[in-house]
Length: 155
Length: 155
Length: 155
Image 1 (tube, rainbow over the protein chains, first blue to last red):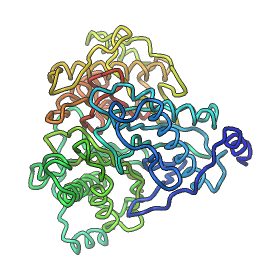
Image 2 (image 1 turned 180 degrees about the horizontal axis):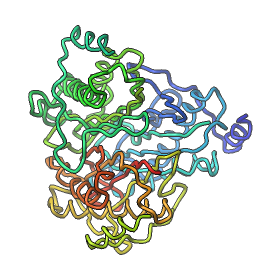
Image 3 (image 1 turned 30 degrees about the vertical axis):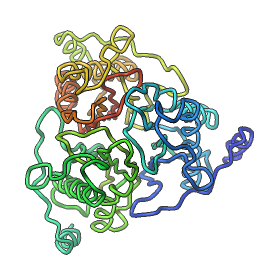
Image 4 (image 1 turned 45 degrees about the vertical axis):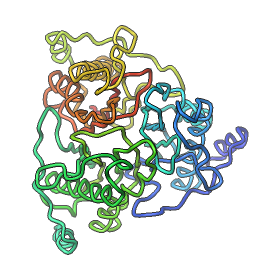
């Protein structure tokens, strides 16, 4: 039962979008044993990339954090689809990789990705505390400001 | 038996090169349990990097897709070496990470990495459908236009 | 017993620092089954980032290799904390991802990350031989020249 987690999402005012369908010869997630591997998620809201550009150029840290939150919401939406709507099957978010489109002098990728880390810990509690990397990219698909992928241990 | 897969490679006109040997204190692949982790592969053909430069600067999308195909062929060549020539031991390509050398305004990394995703799905069918991330890099080793690493579940 | 490995560290003149504590809603490592996932480590020495800037701009290859060595030392320090001080529980370093802050024309990320690969192989022997990726980033947190994360199989 993931009622507790879905209630927590409601409390936080988070609505999980319909998980985006595969658009090509890759898929949004693969389950291997008890590990769920999620494709890189963009800050998509209402079907389009909501935060575009580069940190340090035309996106500020709060804007980047909002992008990271949207990536995290899409990660949860894909996990929800993968787990048949039962997010309580998440035993542990093992690793997040946070990719931040960055001007060469922008050095606060860790603060940007905190947007995702905080949201996931808020929703999932201890099971949401993950290892991570946060790095600065030349650019990202569809001019997204942030992309995040994930490895999740599931029951 | 991987006869079916080797036949499919032949049909597609793909010849797997000899897998490059380890050149340093790292190795081309590690098997841990039933997971095969592959080092980042460059678009090497006939022993040298065949596609160099940056997307959005001096490499166009078809050129980048060709680079991604070559990376995918080298992934299959390393997997073939790791699996004693029996590619039917691939149960599932779990994850590809696609790194695309990109000018800051290039935002079609996903189209470039489709070159690898399509090739792997063409060769392996359902077992080739993977999660992935596609991101834009400042630059890559030996000026390669693309680098791709992989995690593969094996029997 | 990891006496042999701790002796080897001493021989090599390497002192493991106290592992940095979690600073946010993410953690330095997660153990899932027999796999240890480590967060991206920066070239921190004496509590601060010791090598800052970009390869190909204001950091040369030996400077970058020193940064990669420091990242590797912090990886070992975190592994030591995760494994209760017993580094002999490392069965195999499975994968390193080496992120190198790079000017767009710098193409020797592999040489930089050899600093980490060599140190880890020197300390751990065969168990230290890993798959890896080495890629060039627009920039990194706190202006670090290098960031490296790791997946390690443990007993």
